[in-house]
Length: 567
Ligand SMILES: Nc1nc2c(ncn2[C@@H]2O[C@H](COP(=O)(O)OP(=O)(O)OP(=O)(O)O)[C@@H](O)[C@H]2O)c(=O)[nH]1
View 1: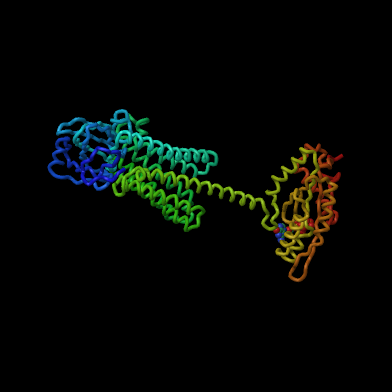
View 2: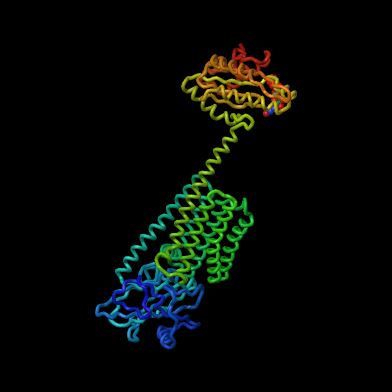
């Protein structure tokens, strides 16, 4: 794209491709609709200003604009060119090609026409023309309620085709990535039911549908018969859908409510007040009012994203920095595209498509944030589960933490026809310890006992605090006899422990009940009918026996087991 010459007449010899804003004069119609001749006279009578940038931009809801562009083909050969206006939302565009004061062609376009009715079946207004030798005046009338941004582009036809191909690849790549991310997150939402994934998927889908709507692709396929008015309103509503979904996604992801309740309220109210205002505008048929509100929401949305990110960083929310980088990049890219369309920065394919690039960048970064968040949630779940399964005083399993692995161990032993034994260990006269030395000493006794039991256990054994001063051990690959021997060893080992009191140190004893799965007398059941609960009840009965017969002893399962059928 070469630098424009100072002369406003465009020379077509060796011309390849260029934005025409700085070669174009323009004025706005004041009330009455002008014919092309009247517009041509206005241009001839008083010199109208030349555009100051590649794109002529006049704001939202402005009067129709007349443009004048003069081309000169100094060569003998005809020049096949394409003239295009690269914003897809302009409603009505009439082009008049005039040579020697005679109208040689009138081209009507704009997004009020379905693609097949347009001069070229294209999302933008575009037509091709072969220019004969000499000067051609082009007068263009543009009428639109949306943003009046007119990036006029002239290209040699082969160049235009190349640009089309480049555009198709770029859009395919960018929107392909967004679509893949949106579907992936939708799947994650369906599987995990985590609402962040659903909102994120909706946010991306909303952005894509919004783009499809304002480029006319959506209307071409779905709402072609409903007219331009309906399409304008649909654009307006789709524009707010992704902003609203995006804001709720950010609130949920950053947990804004927990550390910035006021900001959270502002976000919630933003997502209510603007859509309601736009709806009221729709009821009163005030499209410009509603469009202004949706543009405000769109820009406010980008700013709120950044503010929410900064607030989250201050509150040390995990991944807040990534969120800030993503949202600031996207906001800058949106700003670049808006300024390109408004003629503030040079208009070219990079500045115009910056919004899509920013969106894809943001989408990828947010997907990373989401993945990290998901990972963190999983880690927290593991930690929470560990806490829920652990006895805080002794750090061994509690009953809950014992139950599931014990069932697994027991079933495995039964399936492999192996032995398994249960020990119930209860500290003797523990109430007296508490009464005599206080609860702190009592706690110390429980802790020491648990620690010694854990030390004595093999890796494959399972230990848990079963109740106040009672412990359970499940010994894998152990017969009742072996369990009994082991119980005897730990009884002696625990008796050696000493706990400090305020004056002295004390020791304590335990009673242990043992039951082994090989001792079928237990329930007079076959091994494969025996349950873990049966075995524990047998060990409990044995423990009861140990307590009753004087404490500080090991008793194993015998004929007195409650499961033994009375003879
Ligand atoms: N310090 C302390 N005491 C506990 C804890 N959990 C339960 N206890 C106490 O343990 C005592 C258990 O008393 P009992 O069930 O009568 O048993 P015992 O005194 O050991 O008598 P036997 O078991 O028959 O030898 C009760 O006084 C409970 O308050 C705990 O975590 N810390």
